[in-house]
Every structure is written in structure tokens, then in C-alpha cells.
Image 1: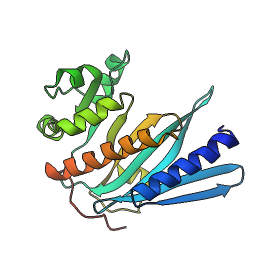
Image 2: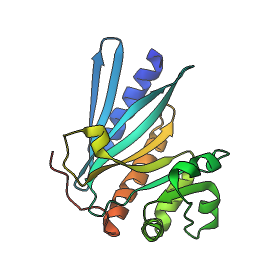
Image 3: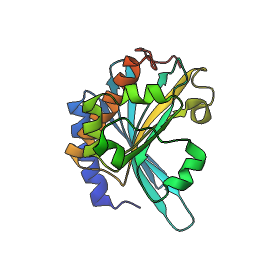
Image 4: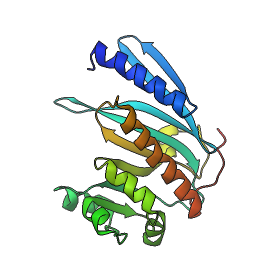
Length: 201
């Protein structure tokens, strides 16, 4: 549970971020819960910044999350996460690692994807790699929007997600996460794995 002082600070910082990126801050309270979001545009895409809680038996893990639905014409998906002691376990579920040829990046992050050549093309962008290395705990991935959005979006629409652990109320960090997200969406468009238009709802 986030305390009131942090929530007020978060509201102030997220409002400033929304002003900087031309977005809109929304505050909503439901019962004892509070739901703050920032919605903004990256090119034609609508992105949402929010807090996401994963409940476990012992506690609740809070993540700061950016996400956006987009048209995925070729079904390309990828998963980028910090290298850890759990790599051997996750390899069972996620396939083989893909190295992009940048030793500092390959040493820190693990990448798995549905198309090795597309992974390399996407992360051939030095700016995207540099931005991710500035946020070493970042988890960037594509998931099937049909699982999460049910009938809101048609077939061929997926969702790109960027998550970091904790509730983030640092403006500089939020700006970097936004930049990573924007670079990723534009990168998907560059390699032909996204259309530069918003999905029809």
C-alpha cells in the first residue's frame, strides 16, 4: 500500500510529465483504491502509464508500466529482461537467447523473440540500446492483446509493454522510460512489425 504523501508526490510528478509529453493525467478513486494514469501519444499510438500490482501469497509487487496496443502485421514478438540467476528456468518457457552484437548490452539483458533476424534489426538501433542500459531493471516485451483486451481490438493487434519494479515518481526516470517506449514503437515500425496507425477499437 502506497502512503498518502507518496501518492501526492506521484500525482504532482505524473502531472508534470503529462504536460511535457502533451498527455493527460487522470485521477480516479474507487472504494479504497486509487487509480492514476497518464495517457499520451507516441506518433499515432495511444500509450498509457499506470501502476500495476502483482499479488503473491506473501505480498504485493507494484510495477510502473507503459503500454500501448498496435497493429502487428507479422506476429513478431520479443521479450527483453535483465539477465539473472533464473535464466535457465525461463529458457524452458521463452526459447533461445538472441545476441545483438553489443557486448555490454548482451551481457546485461536477455532477449528472446519469435524471429531472430527481426530481434537483431530492432536492437540494431544504438540509441534504443543506450536508453535501455540507462534503465537496467527494465522489462520490455510484446504480448497478445487478445488475452488482455478480449474483444476490444481485432485480430492482428498486440500490446507492447515496458515495466520497471516499484512505483516511480522521479521525473527524469519517467522521461527515460517514455523515450525507451517511443523508440521501441518507432523501431517496430522501421522493421515492418508495426503499422504507423492506431488500431481500430
